[in-house]
Image 1 (cartoon, rainbow, N blue to C red):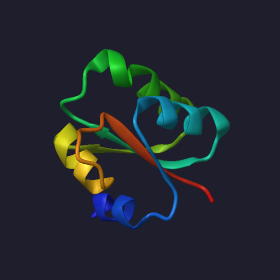
Image 2: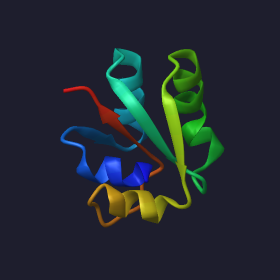
Image 3: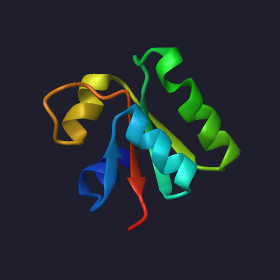
Image 4: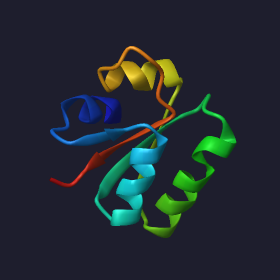
Length: 83
């Protein structure tokens, strides 16, 4: 299950700004996006992943993605990054 790889990742980003930076720097290996995230929030992340050929996995909810990242609040996006 891809979400398990996010839980076990040694390095990851959590949140839209950090995930966007990782994509722009070319260090994002896999990006996770919550299905219930506002389209305006994740639009640039999706575009960046398409342009950079980065694998995107969709998670059912922001709450589920937040829990997978070990935080108590929801997250619109997260990424596994190169070390």
